[in-house]
Image 1 (spheres, helix red, strand yellow):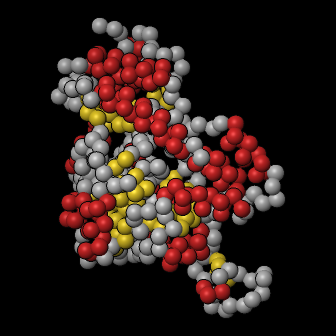
Image 2 (cartoon, one colour):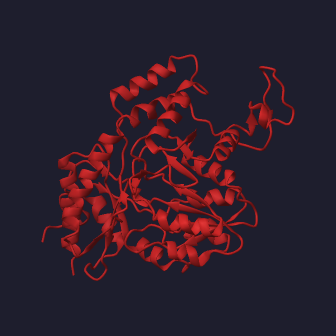
Image 3 (cartoon, helix red, strand yellow):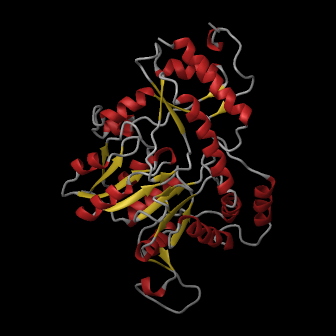
Length: 397
């Protein structure tokens, strides 16, 4: 049996491959440099152009771009009217921001379990958690796969709930042919460097509701408005603006917007390469009984942000930590997405206990994300496969 690098053998490759990485090309750099030479590098024309472009990409009527994905979720929760005494149902497997946005507004997150095969929030689990205090749902398009929006929208319609879609992973994904961003009441995006397109940081909220859009525009910028109809003391003075509610400074710069505009022009190319890599991984790993691959629902035409492998404990002698460390020793650097949110120590202090979502907790014990990004070469992909096969062979029962 070939000895693992973690035990003194030769690693599969000499240089590391991380789970995610941005692709910045010369035209992206030129777009930023050009904007830095302009008169306005914030509150300028590139932000408006980016908002228009995102409307085209998502099919939404309105877009508000912000500083990051967490800001997008916060403003969506604020515009939804969540407040103290309210409950909002959130997926247990997601980055903490999906739930923190509810806390920012004084409301209580209620965690729903996931489907054991798609890893997205289970609509039947959501239905069981609804109470008279429930005001909304934050559904996460985990790994880029769209959640089950037919069922979730019906639940929201029946109970009068606001549906927020956390599409931080899912730019370019479609649900029943409709782009994410035009499905929920509001959709939040993230443009962190590991996402399919990046602005370095950056986020956006899309909506088809003009009232929500107007409020999002205000609270993005301190709650200040220049729209006379929104003022308590309107005037035609050109210098006048008025704070009408408490908001935040969540603006995006124009040079971030310029980078994102350039990146969005490459979204079809980036998406196609990610799909190609996923197909190659699926072809190999779906035939290995030691591993479990994520099931995709037919309604989702997915641009995958993450590729998650689950370990089959009946076929392997190792736990997830041992598998993770062994891959790292091969210079294949995975990650784990995510700790169930309510397992974080902050949430423990709020009174959340383990055992709330059994599927999510089992998933966490077995899952790790392997490298997936546009810049992976075919050789890189084959190195990832070789390393996974090598570790599986060593720990196979």
